[in-house]
Length: 184
Image 1 (cartoon, rainbow, N blue to C red):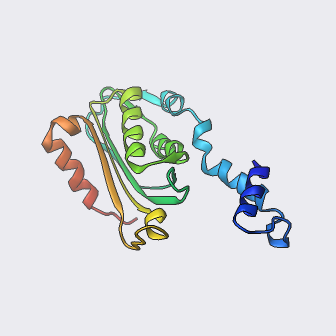
Image 2: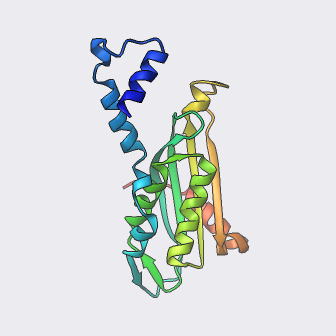
Image 3: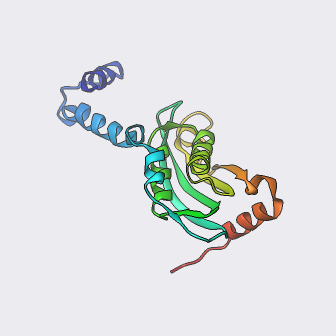
């Protein structure tokens, strides 16, 4: 990978032997491996190792999960907040597993739409709740730094499965709870 990055620097008109760039191929390699570490993690295993029998059947919501990803079209970052809810059906999962699931899928080359559905579908497939809802709000540097160069535009995507899709009251409860902010 370092040789490819060195060649890229040459193609851009740089001298990879220049003092400030000598270690850049190694740094970029390590950075890319970190930013794409989600390819080397198993989201199904993560969730299946943290499920617990529980007679709780109300909405569980984790809001404002910070997420960072890389646009697969331009290899530029997009970042924002992810909100996840599910309606348990005899099983709950450890709360920390939801942000870890977001991390696994966001640390891959992505489009926001796919990221949103992957998180929702994996939760649905593994823990089999009555429903799952995922909303992501993100700012895309590929839109801000190049192309249309819009500095204040952000994208919101959602995935609603099960009761969140079929029951408008459940969906609206989730949406209204997203609007409430609590400071601790």
